[in-house]
Length: 249
Image 1 (tube, rainbow, N blue to C red):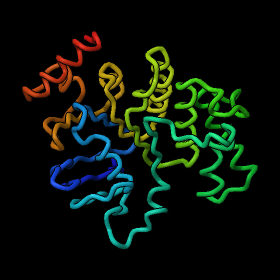
Image 2 (image 1 turned 120 degrees about the horizontal axis):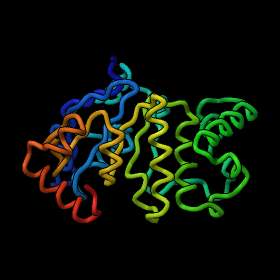
Image 3 (image 1 turned 90 degrees about the vertical axis):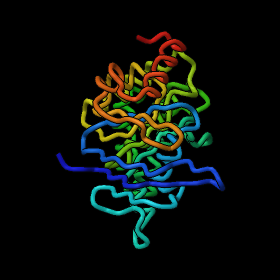
């Protein structure tokens, strides 16, 4: 299986605070990696560095053979190959759902209005929201808004999708509908890097799991090993606390 994403010796500091320390891993095409860890461990910063929304201090990031950390890279073009699903939806509130989703194909891919709308409807159907195409974001539930955000990311036909705790802003009863959509997409072969605090979901969807703490990868491996038989004591403590907090087995 070929590598879609390579992250090598990634480092990032904000002032005197070192947020990422020598982070390295590979993500294969059509696979899913989940990143877990306590708040403040550098998970969101990792995603933002990969997408180059935050520029790393050191290290190398390669997406499908293109080095994003090179001075010669076309960052706008490189970013267009990645979808990013944020915690808080980030939809254009003044645009209807269809226009939110068609925005990328129209403005970034330079598709025609008709083709962009066709792509948008196709992706809205994938997330089960084609009937909401002409609604505004404010008319949707939080779960529906996040599913629109996923459709918007998919509309660019990206090589990789980054999910930054996609359910953290949702009421508990709305979380399942978003996780179901992401699980369906993973089964269809989407390449994804997912930061999540939903441990049951992480265990079920991941091809590999990474435990990040204080900017360091303390442990990584198949989810059945990391979740059921962690080798690092800190990983074990974290999983036990999460299990007690959320009542997960």
